Image 1: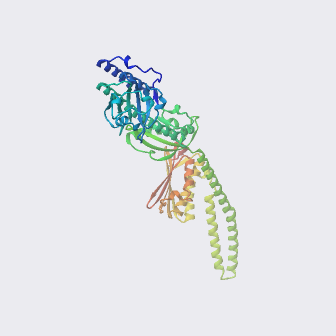
Image 2: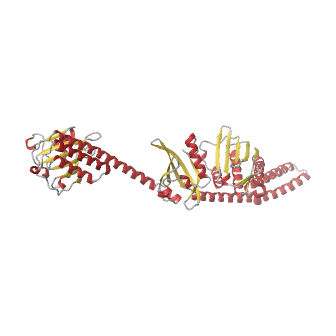
Image 3: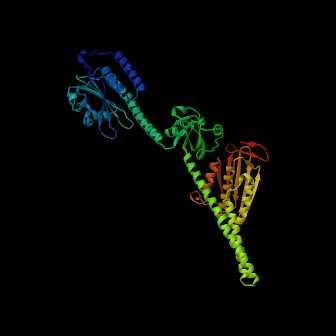
Length: 535
């Protein structure tokens, strides 16, 4: 409850001076101006409502003034502000709506003036000790959105005929108060909404960043602060490119300009992996999803970010384990099964020759067994070649892919062709190995899962990027291919990410094409045909 000073001396009616019309108008205008100023400068402040009660009481030269506010979704009211009453604590009750005077006021659009309660057969003051000494009253409802939101009332101990200009003044103050109460209610809801939003943003696991059309940061939640190492005040208003290393920083600025002028989207509405830049200068892999929204017809963007360093480390561990198992199985095939088949082959060859010299009917069967053992030995050797490490430093990517195509034809019995144009010569053997393994896995998928009988490998590069493509004429992937395990696609994605490349899988009615594209900025290679080196 808002009150004015409860110790103020109640003015004696006999000591009051009558005001002329012009004097009352002046005091009324001054009061309205004062309240308007306070309503604008102060939010929900007890001083505002305490001042309102006192000013209204003084201007109308009455003993008391109070403001009652309706309790939402009920027929009861509560005391909101009062001035000029004794025993104020006894006013805080909510069942005053039973009083006919107050109830009529709530239902009326005008002003209810009672010059003398003792002469009225309809109205009487609320049944409270502090009201029993009052004799006259003037009240009006405080308008609300759908119905009255409360009552503004004044009381006097003497019989008093309230004039029209006094009633108009009370009505004006009630309308002003209605606007103030409505704004306060909206402000409270806005603050609640802001508090909820802030709580959600501050407790979100992922970083949330908003920027305007110029790339300037407007929001930077706690998770984002932890990811990048910046405090909020260090980034607000600055360009989001500060969170990116080159060349992504320059590419981002160009992309914003291009999107603003053409509307062409690259990442908006989707997600991708990018490289982030921390405050300490270190870079790290970052998951980024971007969406667009508008405020006042101005474009803004929201970015959801997540540090995936740990995830990538786990992927590397999985990949290392996979490669280790590949090498182990390949070595077992070569040293174990291969040697055993070689020995069995020599024994079967000797047996075949002896049976042939003896003109045995089993000689023909022995010859067939010898041939099958030889085929099995060759098949095991082909498998081991695909599983054992390749000497990329000696062969290079082009030669390795040529051998891969030849081995695929022998191993799977399909047509496998390799074509190269402006082939890159990588200075980093790890990139060569990952590209080779991606091609190897793609061929295996095309034959085993896509039932393809023709596969094409193509390799091309320029000063901006190197691109490895694998196309086949198989049946492609099923609609839920991403949910299936064992297709090797996850390993291919891991390998692409490790070398800073993107892996694009395109599905067609007559086959599939997989493209691994590695930017020049992510690797170091030279172009044989152009002789230009990129780094």
